[in-house]
Amino acid sequence: MDAQRIWVGRDSRQDGTCLSGSRAQRSMINSLKCNHRFRSSAEEACTTSAYYQDYQYCDAAPFCTSAYLLPALSALWNDLPSGTRVLDVGCGNGFLAGHFLSKGWKVVGIDLSATGIEIARSSYPAARFEVLAADEQMLTSLGEQPFDILVSSEVIEHLYAPRQFVQGCFNALKLGGRFICTTPYHGYMKNVLIALFNRFDYHFNPLWDGGHIKFWSRRSLSCLMSEAGFTNVRFRGAGRVPFLWKSIVVAGETPLYCLLDGS
Image (cartoon, rainbow, N blue to C red):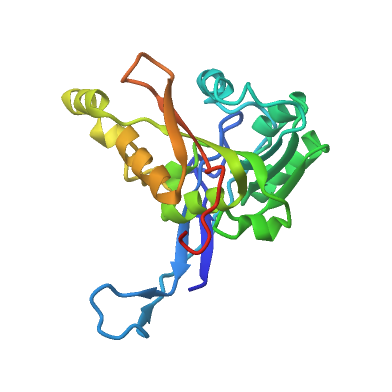
């Protein structure tokens, strides 16, 4: 069924000011008609309320995560030539898009922050930027041909429906296209240390409006990527020492062939 997708602004201070130079983080909540798992009638449906709170960008400054994410990201895209077509999902103020343009790539960026898109358009007029939700129909909504690569940095941890998001990314790529995604890292050693040092209230802070609602490990991300159909899924850590990384970077490819009618 059709769903209305909304995003909740993130990384904004409670006084309403924005964090200059930080990457906007948002969570997407779906307001959709859904079949209740235990209802006898498939026609019965529920609708949840939804709203969107725009993240207010201040400028085109680099994101606070770029210092440790860019080296790990670059290692997964440096083999791609000039002229590569890239879709930056959750592009914010366009900082990553500007990096792609410097490589001679053809860039399209989407985000639901109107202020971010306005800054991106002003800062990088050679690219296309649209206020658009990252859903299963984003390629159709853009009216673009499938992309060579899709990049989404520090977004998926805010999504209410990550399966729909990743499926939309899969649908937006050509055969053999590449998807690269970053998200804060969670794993056994890091989780143990968070518990030992009594940092749960800080790390998993429920009072952070628009904050993280999904906490990804290598295993859970692998499952998500495989479910969507990605192959050759691989990971790199970013920030801090191994297994205490700040973030992980995952990459996968769409298959080079397409099975028709199950054959």
